[in-house]
Length: 274
Image (cartoon, rainbow, N blue to C red; front, side):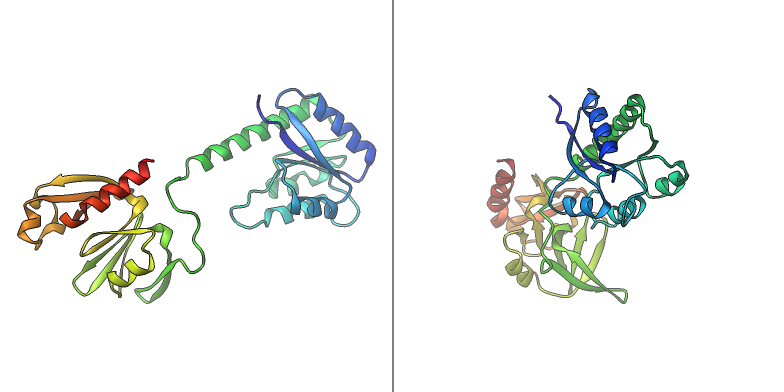
């Protein structure tokens, strides 16, 4: 059974809320449930601070802040906190343009017909389904959003950048500098791999004396001939005769793995599979 969509009614007229509740309850598809009512925008905002809903059926003209001001406040929610969908239900058609500027899903005029409300709720269900599908496509193997301390700070062409450690695929030592690689960019930075290894030991794995790789970014370990990878140039002859490399997610690059680190990489891959 599909979970009912949660609806908040906001209207200063008790009879109007009673009629809307009856219409919502009578609609079988999409299934909706009125979870709360409010007579003013401030009451609705107070309720939303502690509760959630999918859809707000919202009047325009109310005491205090009107419905348009309330909707504008919802649009200012912090990034990553999706606002409920707004369907205006009002006796005044003059505010429709402003309502759609606030990204309202629909604008219904009173008296509302059940068929018209059902069509608006069906559109809301479709929008919510699309939103859920987009969220489901986000990578699930990326660590949770980092704390403020989990950044790498570097200077790039006069800019001071803070790169979230959760976005870093690997660090690689090259000559006197380090390369920091994300899915979209490479940055050159100062520092030492040993310091980074100590700081981020739980998230990164030393695969070679010149490379630290994010554990979640390792996708494949494979034996390769020494000439397959530029990373193997200059490797000890003993290791070059038995060479391994890891494939890095998103950028499809290969990094050399030293013989002494092969077991640790295998263990990391096995841990991801569990």
